[in-house]
Image (cartoon, rainbow, N blue to C red):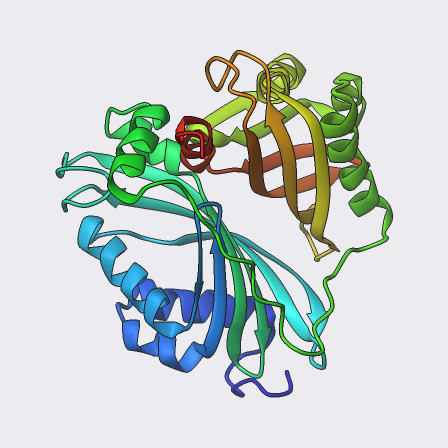
Length: 318
């Protein structure tokens, strides 16, 4: 790979190795080697620019979860050497809640939470990152509802106020694949959010579908998946979804896989999963991975941050 250290055989190898060095090897100073000085990082609750916030966030997380592991479930990717690669890295983290911080006093509980990080990588550095972590899974495992955690964070930090996301690096073009499975996956989400019709789920998902859903839930079969989507969609109206990244990967002896980053703008006008309607505008940043067999989804991972969503709903009217 042009511009990358010779030790890295491909983008997946690069992402797996530097993640292990920084987090599990505790080589936090390597962030200065593998992140650009002006790297932008967006999460559902924040935007930062520069290396210092990345280093501080890493140190803070390890202070709370000092034994945190990052088990790389998959790395899906797109792009090229000229414009930049984009990796979509799905991680499951076992960890013990041993330090005080945003999740309260240490509970000593053993937790499991999933994260997906989309990274633009160019010349041996991460230059732009979007990161979604299942914060609701952490909250539930330490004995809180995600609404309670959101209320606590609102009291400590105030409402989410995100500045405009800095532009992607020069020469980088957002990748939206036009291949068959990728477009099928895109159209599934477009239809769900724009029409609310659930019948496509049964058509596009295998009967034995397994869905890793927010809050650390694992759902099985058409009925579970349809119920999840009905509860997620019902509170929102006038939803507009934009697809920010979409790629399809085919690898030897593995299922075809698709990664998609998406963003929804909507109004909270219905009761249900997120409490009484408030009429507030909300934004959902999501990243999803799916594996296909014979053109149907057999496994799916859908990540949104329910704590950030609750913070928008509970925030005082401005």
